[in-house]
Image (cartoon, rainbow over all chains, first blue to last red):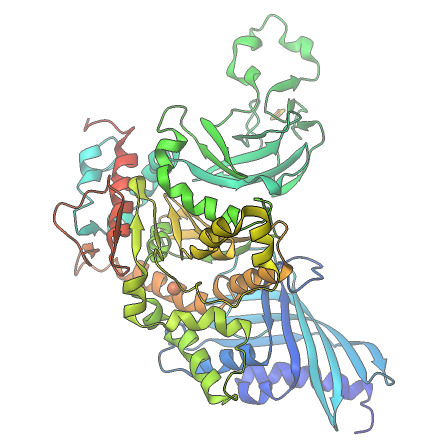
Length: 160
Length: 443
Ligand code: FES
Ligand SMILES: [Fe+2]
């Protein structure tokens, strides 16, 4: 791949969501750059991930920890396991900066997570900042803004 | 009227020295009585005054189930009043915070109130001429709560006009709040951003008890903290690699029983208490460059060392908050129903201290207290299983017996082995006292 096409960027975003829904979390971990962050702000239009609380701001170590924990023998909140389901609207390609090698998409989506008799629905928007590492697209930043980020939630255990 | 209303003896019978009856967690009538008595007779945390820095700023919250609002008045003081129009009951504000200018104006018929709650004006006032309005309770404006105290920025209120005084209620336990505040070189905290809001399908007291439950971390959090420790080891970093901040935060949850035994628990009268008398899971955080020097400058070396040498873990202020002095956090366990509790987790900036401290605090909050937090998932799973399990008729009593000693006196401050359940017993002792204080004898 020299430079990704619009369609390739869009396919990447869909494929990522499908990996999560399929529970292919180890593959999902490989989608990120080493210094990539998975960010879910707490506040509407939050700009700072450091000096106020976020719901998530996860580096490689914390993403791995999550995935390892989901497999754990003594992970009682995952007995039984949760399942999730993404419905994406077609991603907008907001930026294709070939010079910087930076590609940005904007994807409104609905997310459903279920476990036992409970199921909940979240509406969210994902912003992917993708970069080329060698020939492969990787996620440098995935920012997920929940429509109701200021609401009270029960456990959200998988990945949006 | 059910079994418990107006029947103090039946409430007292729910608490035994080493056991509590499941109805304290699952019975709707007991819950209603908690709202009516316990949350009215005690000093309940309302908010921090940095949430209403300017005149006219307000913050809306609940004391128990009572909607209240706290506002900065033109005299510079913070007032707490019921969020209910004296005309026909409309809530004066429904957003969580904002600025109302010089007065509150009810959106229904435009009665207006000063920011201390006093009635300011009524449109078409002549309609009340000779009706005796001035003698009605409506004319007194937004009903104030029974008493308010601003303790170094932390606003507490007691709903009942009569009851224990603030100092009498908290006593020496205020040393934990003092330590948290003294960690600012300027002796001041400021709330940093909105709180995490985490809904729990369990009784609020399970959360309060868990704050000093030192025998669960290495078990319930093996899945999160244990996995973190293993993952870090598996990365096989060269000797001397600095641990990431996240590891510093999460790994101590896996400390062995001896660590928690040795950390100690202190209980104070009226249900307050804390873990981490000698050390805690917050003791070994790396130093933040420049901070100690600022503290020495502000307080002198000896005092700076004394302040930073305290590493209290969780301090419970009965009935429903917990603070962590060393990392400037406050969690409030807001009771919504016998089986429903909203947990809000706030963080504070140490005014004048390096940002790195706040960064660690924010990280701790999202790693441990968020609805998306792996540690939070571990805990909530246990609470919700307990809430369900308590409906089993196999047994009716919950055991809180660890390191019980006959003749325990909860009116005495005590320091004990860090794995004692004395603080839980202390809470129930206070619970009984403040539940029955205004209840009267059996009818
Ligand atoms: S209800 Fe508030 S003015 Fe009428
Ligand atoms: Fe816990």
